[in-house]
Length: 112
Image (tube, rainbow, N blue to C red):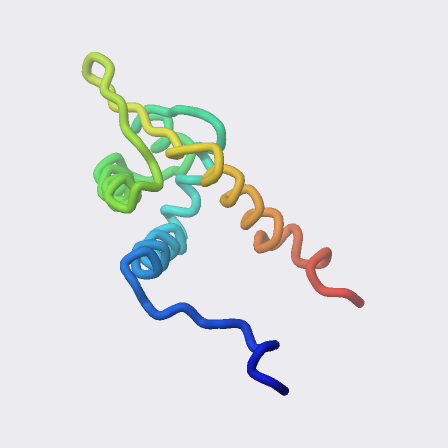
């Protein structure tokens, strides 16, 4: 195989590290459940608690992780904080990942 047909592997840089850290943050089961619960919606912490079935303090900690990695954004209204997925591209990526990786779709991934 000649060198011209081998794809060039980029050196690790700040963008690569940020991307890997964001993917790691999304890979946590509860954070993934939060992202799937949000979908295209903007939800309050209380609504996310209801949809995920876990405690508010636990949800708040995980939302903070997602916010720190620029995956979700927060908006405060009165005494409530609302979260949504940061942008349409990220929403599309999460949708594709769900389609490809969720257990309900496993039979569609592998040719028989």
